[in-house]
Image (cartoon, rainbow, N blue to C red; front, side, top):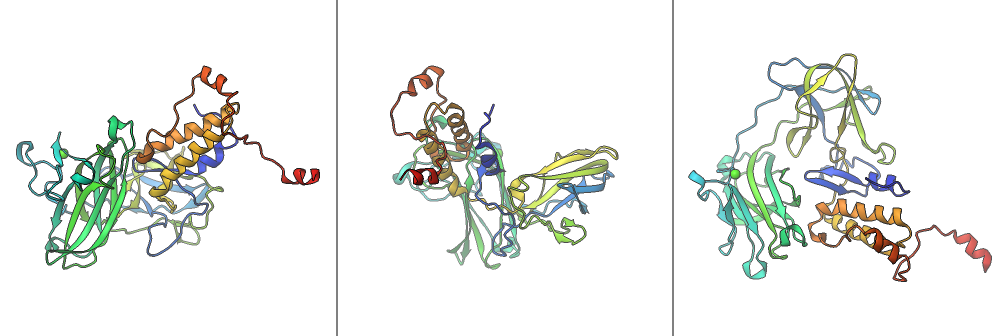
Length: 392
Ligand SMILES: [Ca+2]
């Protein structure tokens, strides 16, 4: 159970849910509206939970203000462009549509999943790839989804690397450019990930690679499964806020003013609230959200959908900062000190390179003894600089 101390509100506002866990974010303003980046808030809509159902939202409020939540008809998924997405051939044999990324790769098929394990510099890149021929592509935006699970060396006790997806343009048999790359597959739980990109040249094939972010930290293992590539869903209607009708106006809304985004719905029947993220309409409420004409239900919009600046690469640094603060805080500041450690421990779950760096919970006896430890610590009391000046 978290302890109460002055740092608690600030750190809560700095963490947000992402696919696979909890991550840190620096920003105080949401919504950047940069046409080249995906920082803008996700459009939101609702659909009937089941075909033929008649769920209706009669009133929607975002943080207590009336909004118009569009209703849409769920359309069928577009065709999957990958072969052997389940990573399995007939009777559990190797799926021939997938190749080792380099000849020295020794990626294995284990339990119906691709098992990619780093083997160091000599082993080179590990992983599998598949080529999607240009005649299967239209040049339109594509949406990729997959399941992965990361296990760092020492059965998860030592630091490791993240998973990586890289997609190259392949023109006349030659790779001519990187189209998309992400290293966000870093959850130690089996997690579904989504991502989207637009091919650069509609006449070229695409080369999809599933790997690790580097080949260091020998023994890092990542499993891949259920890898699917489709044309992006049609975006369609957006959430408009009355009366200005500007799309999803979280822009310029300070995180410290509205740390969370609550959508409150009144109506009847069973619906699902969805957000358009990574080229896909994804449920953000339970698949069956039962509405009531007299009693509103509240859906919290996940922070990753509100136009925040998320940088996975900074997260390791944030864990370092917490551990550093913990180590330099005097042991007699027990509550505050333990609070920092607990935060570092909860954040390290998404920082594979920092596993093993967060100190273990102190035993009561050890804490008593360390009060007398004259080590490199400082008190976190705030010092008034003007009182020092008076003494001079
Ligand atoms: Ca499988």
